[in-house]
Amino acid sequence: MISIIIPVHNEQGTIREILQAVRKEFADVPHEIIVVDDCSTDHTKYYSMRELGIQYIRLPKNLGKGAAVRTGFAHAHGTYVAIQDGDLEYRPQALQMLYGYADNNKVLYGRRSRNAGYLFNRLGNIFISSACNILYGSKLFDIYTCYKIIPKNILEKIELTADGFEIEAEITARLLNNKIKIQEIDIPYAPRTFAEGKKIRFKDALIGIWTLIKNRFNI
Image (cartoon, rainbow, N blue to C red; front, side, top):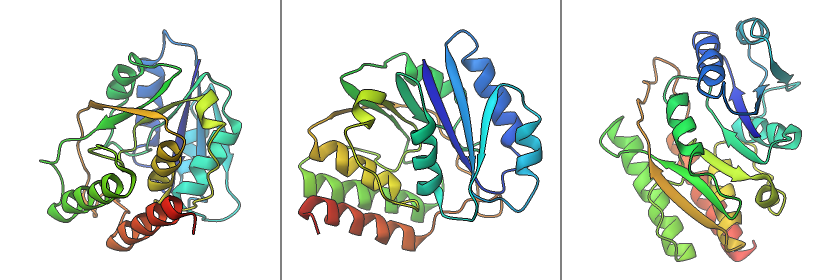
């Protein structure tokens, strides 16, 4: 079984479409869907709760994507655990394709093209992935991808504490520190604009770099 964690914050415009798409793509696969609402102030809860067969968890206050992801991980029961954003940047068809490569001995990352999206975001991803490779001796292309499929037995070996977007850096750092193999597989990606709700900013990249440094040198 695969547990699909969907961290959301003010995603009323897309959450129902995402939930329906996930259910369709994984209809023939044992799965559970866990929506973790980071204290949305719109109608995300209403649209989420209208979809049957999901587990909905609402955080008591806005804590960040990392806190939502960690909460979902703690409630997951699947052999594999995956992350699906609540917007339409990542299509569940790609997650289902990625799941076809699932293996208990490695973690799967969905690798995005660097030809789409804001130039700043593309450069930021190059910078933070390069910093990771320098610090850890890895050869990863896209450590800030949302699509990560982690075997539950591996997830239980890594301790996560990040609350914000730096959860992506922390997951990668902890996996590399534990000598866990990460396999990257190309996926389609359609980045949204800031006007459409894109949330990650320059400061998040700096926090991500610091997270990599802290975990590399046990600061």
